[in-house]
Length: 357
Ligand SMILES: *Cc1c(COP(=O)(O)O)cnc(C)c1O
Image (cartoon, rainbow, N blue to C red):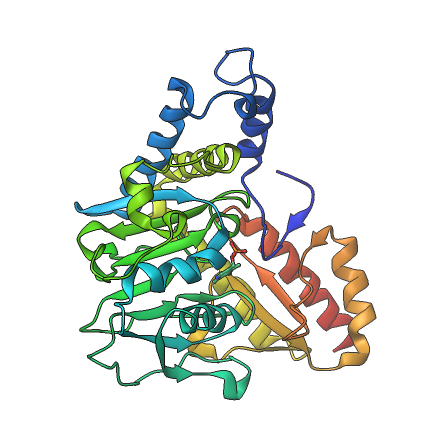
């Protein structure tokens, strides 16, 4: 285990053994005496990486027949544009739930393509809660949700029941818990929060939902382009896909999503319990909507900031400074962060409480 406890929100911690394997492959991949990043993406060795990564996604999430797994570039942010292009009919509309910066960025991109209906928003309380009980317009082509709001520390605990197709940005909680893929027409996620390095974005898309918009889609934005070419229409981000494959192998070897879901719950319980019981801290997100991935909290006495910062820094904790739009602290507890790291943070918080409480 690394000596640094890495709570970074993204790019974020990856398993130490994955970093080791990745660094070896950069020098000598598969005993070819060539680097992973200097061979053709159409070579047998790389095609095997792509196929393994795709089949691990299918296996780990129980992806049903009829869905395709793609590894593309552009980040989730380009996904914000691919969604309306591929799913919103010409002259149609789409429904969006505004639960944070990323959700609202997704909405802004869709507005460039067609009509957007904002069905609910938590902007009134700086996105500290997840809206519920909103009507979903039956005439919209799809409902777009963001399952985990990385910046604000909120997470959907149950997905909306919808008669129209649901599309989800799962960038910061994919592979963290079991999901039923068949409830979604598409799931997409940037790799760098819970799956690998920045540079690739995974799309899990129901094939029968495509090709129905009646609009002209630019080649690179058209998901059918990439399905036809098996994610190799142009040069894929080979390194990011390789490291994602290693991370998924690591997840599978340890017990898969069912295993990590329990670990993630234990980590979140440990930290939120301390936030709630330590009078020097207060959680930012509405307790019922708290994220198991990103915990946001602030000090009850801002004057103690320097003292607390000194303490966690000397415990080798890194990356817990809050996002500028929330302030305070944000501890991101993605899959690769061990429970022991959360324990170190909680111990520091306890000690801080004893000293200054
Ligand atoms: C980080 C993040 C994004 C942006 O991802 P990029 O890959 O940087 O474009 C989008 N949505 C969510 C939920 C995120 O956490």
